[in-house]
Image (tube, rainbow over all chains, first blue to last red; front, side, top):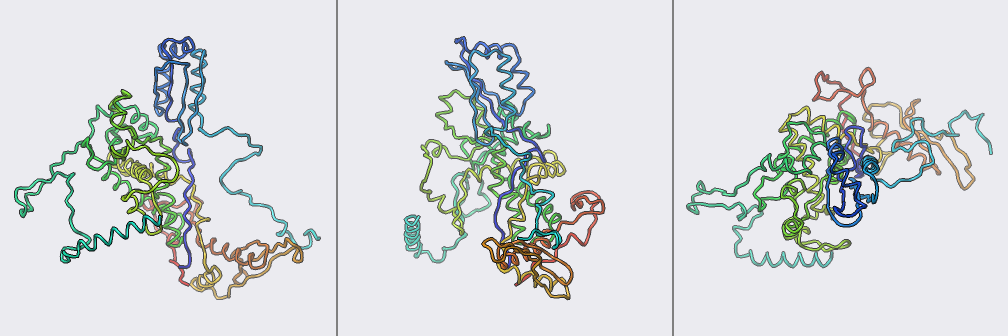
Length: 140
Length: 370
């Protein structure tokens, strides 16, 4: 055989063709008695959570009644799970957290000190000192 | 592993001894009686009276509508309204003749697989008409191989149904929830405790190990078949154009590192043969374009592959041999990865699109033999 193929998987580019929201499930755990769950209980009763769920139909909302402090759990499609404490928060603060983390990619946050992060090769190419005319080349 | 092999050979020997009495009936396509089909007959010899009495039905749409997982998946994939939730649920069912008697995704997944392979091949052939056969197959696999499809299935947020009937009952979970999960495990498998790490393959799993000693877990296969079945379901509900758009959006939009898929054994010989085939009269020559630090520890050479005055490829290396090989490989890649464009510089139209016109450039010259 002259040429063999090296099996390399293709790389996902979410948003180039279709966009699939990375956050697919949110679990809201609250207590029906404790004072730290006041905000969540308000959110459930005043219909704001219903509106959020209707706006984000691609996310499944799972409401769990359990004793203890309230907690938001976000499930992402890269197998990561983020657990957020929301004890003693008002309904507005919890709504803000829900919106923030439902738009998250699920990756860990990191600092990147360069201008571009890309999986593509540079369009310009890389400058080479060997391709300038011979008389202008640097001589050692 | 070795123990397994020994076990298997031992088992084979026994079966050989046992079947030696029935030489006439020994063949590899003996019909096996599948008790799950619940076959009934009036007379054993009257084959026309044979009937499978297994009862499979589709999930009622009203039950599927009660499953939030299905509704979420439907809108996450932006599926059209005509796409029924019961079809989506069927696409996630991989169980053969399961106890619940629901129709499985076998037909949908076969349909989806064929559509996928058609549109993937069409796209690849039009994009890279000169791709050698081996690399073309690898590229098709990179787009729609089981591992890739499983990755896509996971990114769609499909969950595996690992909850056994007992746990289901104890957690007071609504009945409809399980219809939105990927069902492929048997009830016994769900109850066994699994630990992470190394584990011994079962007899059934050992048989699925292929000749390259590669093993694809059942979960990966289930995810892949679910993705194929979702595509098949889209075709049955809304037809070909929407399915094609879906495949282009979800699968062909992925980045394909096709330039990393080539493994040359004798590149220089191949380039010479290729130039011969293309009818170039001048011989292939490898020339040194530039060099620096020949006597130092870190020399850099730039070599080029030329035919007459035309430069076919160029390569940089730390030795003359490396630079030469890179130049030759670069020239070969330049030929194989040629991608035709139309007069306006756009990608050419695909044969399945309206207004497609055949062009000579979209037909490759075939592989080179060395």
